[in-house]
Amino acid sequence: MLKGILNYAHYLLEESINKGETVIDATCGNGNDTLFLSNVVGQTGHVLAFDIQEKAINTTKRLIIDNDRTNVSLIHDSHATVSHYIPKELHGKIGGAIFNLGYLPKSDKTVITKGESTTDAIDSILSCLKKDGLIVIVVYHGHDGGRQEKESVLKHVVHLDQKEFNVLQYGFINQKNDPPFILAVQKRK
Ligand code: SAM
Image (cartoon, rainbow, N blue to C red; front, side):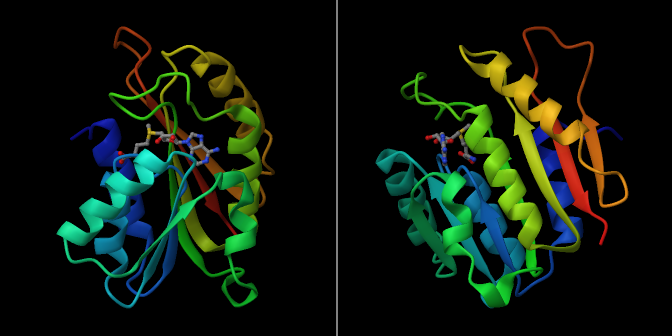
């Protein structure tokens, strides 16, 4: 059975993250992925959730409180600064991460994720990820600026050393209107 893009992104993370781990939502937006990760790691785990927009941080905070979750730290900052928020003792132990690229749904379409900060964040997280851990990137690219980001992220991950990383692309190639696709990077050692 072929899974839809968001279902497959969550499936990959559920399969690779253990209870009690610290994980990262690099673009918390409306908080759906943050809540999902919070449930996957359980009360003994921890989610670091980033967004540059206060509106996104507030929406996510409300969702987390409404669902009685207490294992989330909301960080109103760019994911490009993620290394500042990962303590030394968690280097090599981050359980996984998700990026949902693009703009906040039903909000300002000019505030978008951008190639340079996205690839900086991917590299920082990869350096702290556990062996066999995954970064799952959901690439939306139909909006203004989306194509440039897609190209720079693809160019970046395609060059990751295959001895160190497995890089997967998953998507539906017969869909119209620039359908989103998944890039998943697994750290091999
Ligand atoms: N994962 C979210 C959810 O479940 O609702 C959707 C995320 S939305 C597609 C993309 C988000 O990325 C927006 O909320 C936007 O503000 C945020 N964003 C853009 N640039 C960012 C950056 N450099 N660091 C962190 N978040 C960023």
